[in-house]
Amino acid sequence: MYRSRPKDKLDDHVLKFLSSIQQDQSILYYDVQGSEAHSIMLHEMGHLTSGELKKILAALEEAKQEPDKIETEGYEDIHEAIEAFVIKRAGMDAGGKMHTARSRNDQVVLDIRMKIRDDINDVCAALASLIVGLVTRAQESKRVPMPMYTHLQQAQIGTFSHFLLSYAYALMRDMERLYLVYQRVNQSPLGACAIGGSSISIDRKKTAILLGFDSIVRNSIDATSSRDAFLEYVATLAILMSTLGRIAEDFIIWSTTEFGFIELADRYSSTSSAMPQKKNPDPLELTRAKAAIITGNLVSILGIVKALPSGYSRDLQDVKPPLLGTSATTLDAIKVIDGAVRSLKINKNKMRLTLQSSW
Image (cartoon, rainbow, N blue to C red):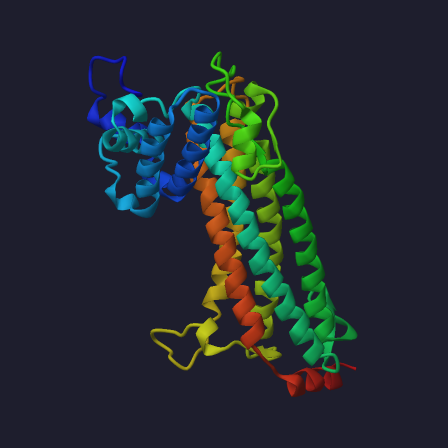
């Protein structure tokens, strides 16, 4: 349907340049869900018969259950590929109506909002596990004395549990920020169409309810143009990653021979190809690096959306890779730190000896 006007095929190189098919695999499920809700709403508004709706939903369920059946070669994005799949399965008379009163502009931002909602829930669940791990280890080490540092110089006597709880409090603030972002992400843009809505009668609130949104984005230009909720999300994860990077740095220092306050478990460390006696904190070092990459993703998205004219521009397609990559990287990093915290060995005697020689 997207290619119904042009007479010539897209140049192969241009098609490859335009295509986001590879990046779109992570939003395929959400595109199907959005299409199902949109089709149900079209039926309730009298634009689809029961028979047409049944054919469309059957095709969409097949796409959801067996996504490998969707042919992606020759298509610009997953939205086009799914529509072609539905038309092939349901026929043009039914499948050709699925996209009524909808544009890729409101469709893609809908899919991403749904994906980010789930990502926030996944990140918060992982964060909760990490916080529990920190509190549990803090409970175990209430009586473990440890130097507290300023300027990386010994300053006062504290406990290892005090350090662990400082991380827990910082991470709880990160979780609070994520809950606030969730409220702004959880608004449906569907029905804004390309930029100015549609002259076809639709029920935006119905699709919002079907898809679990709290509300709708009321202004159609805002719905298709704005990416500030996504920016806020990536900024929040950048702050979270900076916390994880700080935890990683502390653990790296404390696990050195010179400090020896903690020992990382073998499954959360690596070794040297030339010096196998070494225990290298590679997962923690990569956590530090990932924190910088997430900051770079934030700057990339800011650069893309800066000074764009109102209305959808294709530039926004390139927001997806750094946005969705940030979710995956952050989730991986949280799980690494969680595992390291729960499995590390606390060298109480080394801490006591360090304090005795310092005071």
